[in-house]
Every structure is written in C-alpha cells, then in structure tokens.
Image (cartoon, rainbow, N blue to C red; front, top):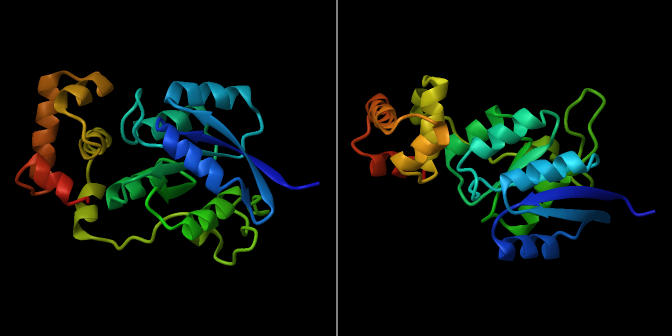
Amino acid sequence: MTASRKVLLVDDHELVRVGVKATYGELLGLAIEWLEATTLAEALALYRAHGDIDAVLLDLNLADCKGLQGLRIFMQAHPQARVAVFSGTQDEFVVRQARALGAAAYLGKGRMTSETRETLLALLAPASPNGGAGVPLGTAAGAQVLFPRLPRTAMYDRVAELGPRHLEILELVLSGCTNQEISQSTQLSLGTVKNYVSSLLLALDVRSRSHLISLFR
C-alpha cells in the first residue's frame, strides 16, 4: 500500500492552491491528500473535523486575519498541530517570530520547487523517538531545511527586547495593515495604536513607517 499524508492548505488564492496541489501531489512515492480552506475560521473547523491531518500550510494574509495573528490563533486552538507558514515574505522578523510562536516550518512561496519539496518531506516525516522531526524520506538534511537560514542582525537584537504587545503591533505593521486595521484586529483604540507605532519607531531608531517596513524586506 502506498504511504500517504493528509495536508490542509490554507490560502485564499485559488490559483495558488491549484498550483500547489498539481505540483506536490506526491513526494518521492509519498501520496499527498490535500484539504483546502480559504479562511482561518474554515481551516480551524476542518482541522477539528479531521483527526488525521499530518500538517497545515498556512498563508499569513487571509480575509479574517492578518500577519502572524492567524498562526497564533491556530496554535492556541491546536497546540499539537504541525503548522508551516506559507508566505511570500522572507522577512527575518516574520520568520523568527513564526518559529517562536510554534510553527513547524516556514515555506516561502518564491522558493524553488526542489527546495519546497525538500521542506515538505521534512515536515511530513515521522517523528523521531526523542520527539523531534524525523529524517525526511530521501533527505539527509533533516530538520535543517524546515526554516530559512538567517543571520543574526543588530535590528533583530533590538526587536528581541520588545514586549509582547509591541511585537504584535510590529507584526501587523509589517503585514501592511493600517492603524485602523490594527485597531480592529487588536481591539485597541486608534489613539493607542498610534502611540504603539510611534514608540516602535523610536525603539528601533527609524524615521518613518515606510522606513521601518523597508528594514524587514
């Protein structure tokens, strides 16, 4: 019998979902059964309904969530889920925060097909006896391919000193959210959001919102 894995793909672009399913229908003899969701709410419902989902590919920008908020909510609802962020951004801050929030892998949409295939194999590999990721089928690199290799920078050192709320606001700013959208997402008043954004600019020693965003591109 052919080995198989069930993967939940969460992305609101139909063309992306079609492309992923067509390209990764199988991985070195490992058959992939794809489930699809277009919103975070739909993804949470599908994960609850199916007790045998091996991994989740989660886009960061959906109609009902922005940035890493979706990952945070998903991991709170399903702490044992193996969730891979599936995003077009390779921002150092976003990658590091995704890992800190419990993501099992980070898949950039712009990566080469061979690299994505290798990461998917590592993500779907059986767990090793010590609880870590097992060695992926046909791959010697193991868990090393699950996240992009990122250099440590002075900017990241500054970010590491920020508090949880500042980090949450920064995530949303880097996702392109306006102050009004941040206010709606965090349930903070618009004035409070403006104060947080101003303090972020000061703490990270940047001149403007656009300058801040450019540092993580």
